Image 1 (cartoon, protein in one colour):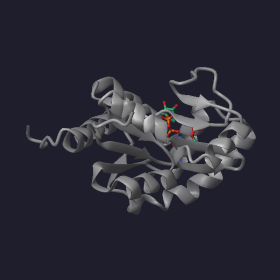
Image 2 (cartoon, rainbow, N blue to C red):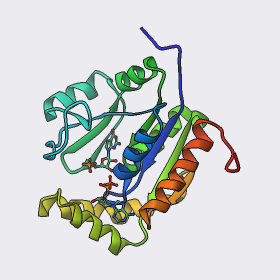
Image 3 (cartoon, helix red, strand yellow):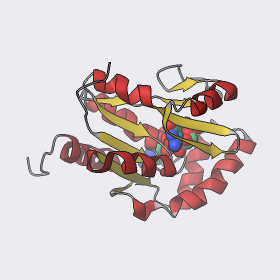
Image 4 (spheres, rainbow, N blue to C red):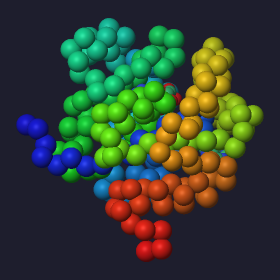
Length: 197
Ligand code: ADP
Ligand code: 5GP
């Protein structure tokens, strides 16, 4: 059954380590009207990640089969051999629940979702205070092997140059300030609330 509710799409994008996950988790906790779009990936789960909550984890074969059957709204090979994608069924699932959707996806995926949904979609680029600080945070998170860390650093340089193509830029320097700013952006876009209200 196709949902008759079609909510808004808040797309949070940034280079790895900029703070997307931290900001997205805060917004989900703050606004029950928002739900997280769980992406599919063939990368292995990190120790604290859960199936169906953080990602739908699958084999490369299964991911490729889903590409062939046009199951993805968008997908990218974000790192060499590492695939990530938004399932069409995920957007439908969340709209059935009458939720607005929040995404944590890479810069190209964000651009593709904006192309499909236009003004119902807001793209927000999370900008680290500096390249050096981004590297420090990614290292501090302790989730990557040295090979994966190198892949991410190479890609970060490219991703940082994309910032001008998004609707909003949110600088994540002091976390509390960034979370407040993220709340303002969300309230203005999702609930069409003015800053003074
Ligand atoms: P992403 O999802 O963009 O890869 P994360 O949200 O995982 O980034 O953040 C990367 C690391 O930086 C995490 O360890 C997180 O706790 C930390 N972090 C996030 N925002 C800030 C901030 N404003 N100041 C310092 N550390 C931060
Ligand atoms: P991580 O492995 O750190 O969870 O994610 C790596 C990168 O893949 C991040 O930039 C994240 O935003 C991106 N990503 C996660 N899910 C998707 C998705 O469904 N589509 C696209 N295009 N990128 C995604």
